[in-house]
Amino acid sequence: MNRDSFEKGLKTRREVLGSEYVDNSIKNADDFNLPMQELVTEYCWNEIWNRPGLPRRERSIINLSIITALNRPHEFKLHVRGAINNGLTKEDIQEVLLQTAIYCGVPAAIDSFRLAKEVFKEMGI
Image (cartoon, rainbow, N blue to C red):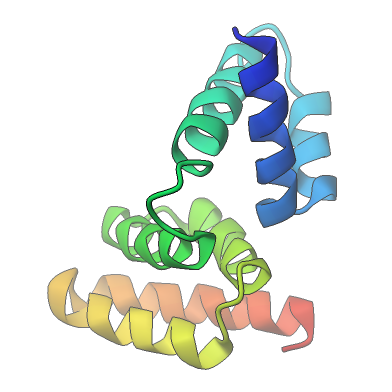
């Protein structure tokens, strides 16, 4: 693990997902899943999220779409919070999910609408 890349990724990860979530993920990691935490922090959050090619807002749109297609509810809810932190509005997320209904399938989009509503309620949006 490259410590500098990890620290840069950790900073970005905290800014997008929130320090509480990220710090708990790292703190609760054990010998089994710590390498995965290090991998995603260094490569996802530094090498990809810190690239200059796309702003975070656009990266969040892409993530919500892909995670809907993959039907990963935990990650979806997490990235709804990140999308809000990256400047997306409730209406923006609605549009992303309507788009996914056509290209990923209605059942996937309906589940993501339900999950997004849970996050909006939790966040008071």
